Image (cartoon, rainbow, N blue to C red; front, side, top):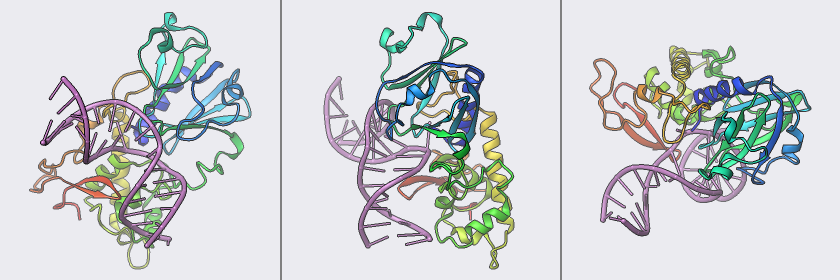
Length: 293
DNA sequence: CGCATCCCCTGCCTGC
DNA sequence: TGCAGGCAGGGGATGC
């Protein structure tokens, strides 16, 4: 599912029911997801109050009043649902254990205030970890992350400086979380389209011969910001299994200009190009070969 | 260092 | 209808 706008949307949805509340019970139904759960995962969280939820890159961080922060990564298919029906609540048990509906519910968080937050992840590419608040930024998850694309550290100068020595394709450069954190396949495709830049262009060509930012860098920064801002405002993109934590659907997928639109006419005014699908790094890229250079 | 490839796991869609 | 194959929003390991 999730790139930055989807994770941001989920984070906001969870914040409403988790912030300020205490964890009455944490139910963990298996020993691992993508990675093993940390030792005594449920025990270390039980009884703690959730102070604040925030997002960094594609992670959700839940700060608690205890020594550990809960770090969540949704992988490809992770999602949260919020259950509020009092009738569905059987302490320490999953709703689906009782009602028998869905598989792949791996963790449940029971909170004061009456909500249960359930993590479901069919592919189990997501994971959870516990990290001390003071060492979050230096943790293995965050130590190599680039700047937030919507934050102050991401600008034309950063792009130019980072890309200047890179021989890789622009697509791969933007997917690399060390360069900028939070973009994934969809929003890279959409941002490159908005910027009029080819996904096949060498990253180094964004900078001038002295490694300084060009207009292309500025256009790319503006394109990334605008597409992310709009996607967040739309509640993210709902493809296949993605939903917001409250169960409602994002609708930015209706605004895709190129993603999953191979064969469609290019939407750039005056452009007669056709959206093409190519494969880069074994993943689909969608672009207009005519107006993206 | 950069890049391609494979892999983790499951579900869904397509085409035969 | 059934089944095989391809594909998927992430990201880490490996080998060239």
